[in-house]
Length: 258
Image (cartoon, rainbow, N blue to C red):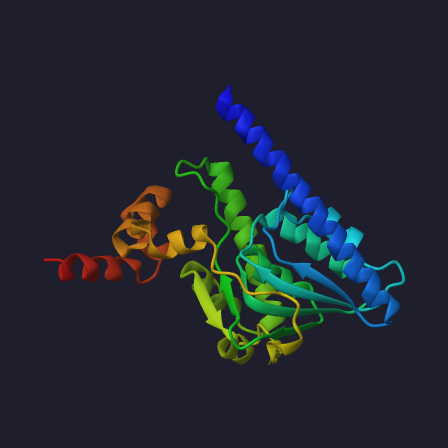
């Protein structure tokens, strides 16, 4: 009962903070409109529908009614793929131009959101990250695996269309969970140019703990990734075919520890 009470209080406080932040952003939009410039929208929280997260409904409410151009200032670790797809639909239907400026990071679903923008700029310290759709569940049903494969293929098409890179290369990048710095993002077509951060309103934060944990976790070793792939595919042969190069990395890792 005590734990439930503290959880309820924490959630209420988080919701109040989100409401205050949304109000401040609305005021910033009003100031931008009064100056007859593009409306600036900050994407600086997790994409989703939970309290404190940024949803398609929230984004629709941020877009100016007069259809003027918007600038999405993005510093986001990602979130729900479905919500990102809904946000992409909102931006695609919007009659004004949408430009994205990435500060620090547009990871996972946030990098997918970039595919709906007419222009993409990145600051020198920005990173993009591409990976496959996944669920936080080690035991997936066949239907769930099919869904994840379908979502990942849809993402491949969107990244490929935006960047001009072949679908085969995009799949390899997503399978490997690829991080791109600013220069690489531009070189591969995921962004249009590198810009100075001098005019940005976003204050860079440290990489979220859950991202750091993923990068440093033992689960990211080649051995663990191989074991997970075999469990997901049901056989060594299928895992080897669907994860090219992973078996060799696993064997090299095992031999290096002897």
